[in-house]
Length: 203
Image 1: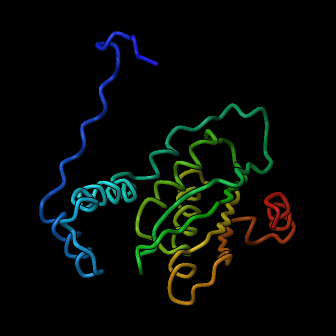
Image 2 (image 1 turned 90 degrees about the vertical axis):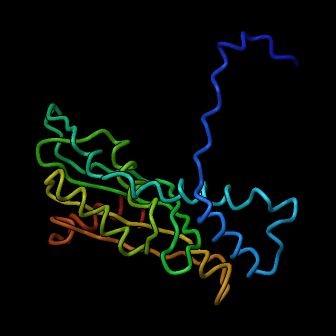
C-alpha cells in the first residue's frame, strides 16, 4: 500500500553515528582472525554495524544512574511498607568475554519518608547494566545507588541471569541461571524483614 502522507511530515531517520576507521579496522582484524574474509559482500558493512551496536550496548558509560533518583515524592499518604519492582528484564555483557548476560532483576526498598517513580528503579538498573559487567558488581552497584540516594530503611536487589560465556562457550551448559543478591539496612539486619521481601520477590 502506497504511503500518501506528506513527505515533509514524515520524520527523517536519525543520522548514523560516524565510526572511526581505527575501530572498523580492529573489527576487520577480528573477523579475519576468526577465519572469514572481511571484504566479502556480507561483511563489508559489518565493522561499522558492530561498532555502532557496541556503542549502544555500552551507553551506560555516558550516564550517571544516580540522576534518575534525584526527583522524589514526599506525599505518600503515610505509606511505609515495601516498594518492589519485580521481573525487570535487562541485558548486559560480561567483562571477561564480552558475551551477553540476559536476565531479570527484582529491586525493593523500604522508604523512610519519600519514594521515587517506579520507572526510575529500572533506569538505574539499565544505567549500570549497559556497561561491561560482572553480575556480582552489577547487583552491588544498583543496591548501593538506591541506598545512597534515597536513604531508605532497607534495600534488596536480587538478579537472576544467564551468561553466554558459560552457555555458548567453555563448559557449554545451557539452562543455567546465576542468582545474586544484596541486602542492606533492615533487609540485612532483621530476619523477619528479609523473609518478607524475599517472599514478595518469590525467592
